Length: 79
Image (cartoon, rainbow, N blue to C red; front, side, top):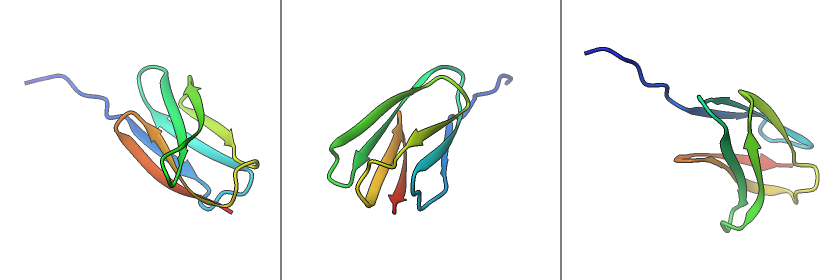
């Protein structure tokens, strides 16, 4: 059997983040990336058109947040 499947991989740094959260996305098309707080409330949505992007998190209150893309979720801390 042949063929390969591109696994979409989402990563983010630095953690904890103070002002900017950098993201890296291994995907073959645009993806909606969303940030929710620990209670599941949507904080922001961002269409990721590139393999890497950055989010301004400077206005977020300190705490734990979830960065989500499709089925993938990463927790990050805002200091």
